[in-house]
Image (cartoon, rainbow, N blue to C red):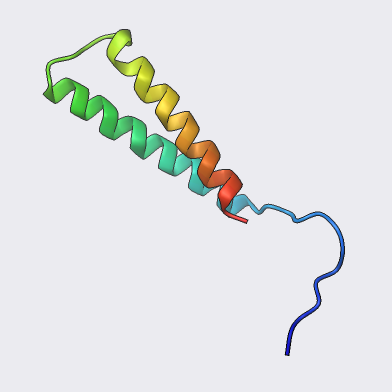
Length: 65
């Protein structure tokens, strides 16, 4: 038995938004902690972490339908 889905656009819920933001925040926190542990500090060490966190958050948001 297969369920028929109505034609239309899929609606993303608030859970995928919050999950993406939470995952991005955790990625950034781990990046900053790792950079600090390795002795790197400042904006130069944090900027790649911000970019990575944004990419992971966007991927989680788009992948979680």
